[in-house]
Image (cartoon, rainbow over all chains, first blue to last red; front, side, top):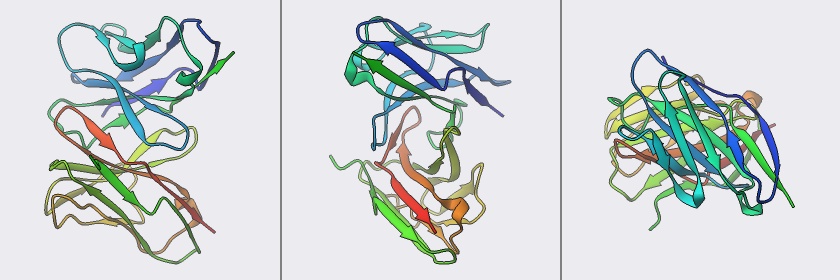
Length: 115
Length: 110
């Protein structure tokens, strides 16, 4: 079975500062990795995904994440955040042979951007 | 593009009542799922389907039923609502590499 741990439940940062949201996973088999964003009172939107290949993955809105197999991590980064990035962020994993129906999510990290 | 449509957006139920949360997708996806979101717990899988006529249980299936008679629709039934089922429910449909989520249904059981 897979599990995901997001190491910070809340991350406050100032506007235009860099941010890193941490995600560690546990799995005995290879996995696909995802970051989703949830804006207030909305559904989840895919930010980026790692399936295979380059370990540095670029997503929407200037976010990127790096897959580190030895440390079983998939941390999300942005070099300069904006007020509009205020949201909850979820890391998720699933096995490649399973379809999109069986994602395992972390607990979420609430990112708050202060002016 | 409608994508994944959930109805209703909000619902209040009394303990013991039954109801069906509706989910419809117009992307011809084989895979569909139901998750519940609770504070500090992320999203947890309730039931999922890999195609019409095929469903299976996820991590937290107790108290919920599903069926999938068509590719487009995947309703979630609460047979006898309990306060522990107060949550935000998300339906998702997907391809092999990506899932698309609806806007959610906020359910309160009193």
